[in-house]
Length: 225
Image (cartoon, rainbow, N blue to C red; front, side):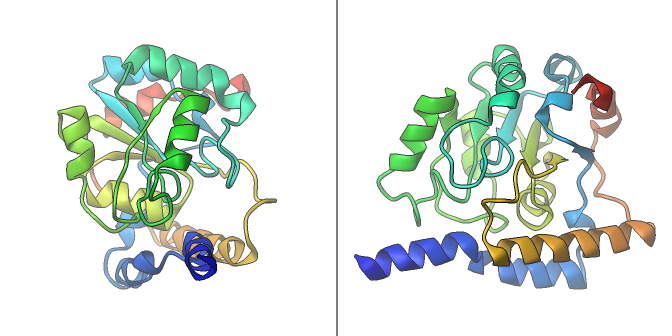
């Protein structure tokens, strides 16, 4: 039991599945790490306008996107925005996390159920850690293709790479809190930021998306925060 718990704790800090993907992105698929849109947090997204312009659902990361790391409660300032999202998209809003709902670290779905109870959003159960894996489970849940779905997360090389690789519109949020993150995660985040900023300076663009121009009309001004 001790060894199992140790592996789970280590695995949540080190994404072994993502290491190979990281190398592949840096070497040949750099555009996959670039989000279509970047916001401070989800309060700057106009959910009603998103739906009006053709999007059918939203997939959220959990840690540092909706909750502070390791918490199972919504970060309070996001409450109104998340409620608006739910009122617009109904059941077509889910959490797709590398912690809650991932069978490797949440085998009995304890975290998934607790998060669902806390924030009122379905947590997708899945077997493969982002950015690896395909989006069949997500498409099956929503009943539509990923090009009509929005992936929202705070990490370039997990959430954004997974979303871009599978055809979502990707939105990057700034992390809610770095205080709770382990040292190694903070260092990886700094490396990600350095690489992405370097690629931006060299003129690299994100992957194309058929609804990108529509989505750009769905952001609120930062002064509204």
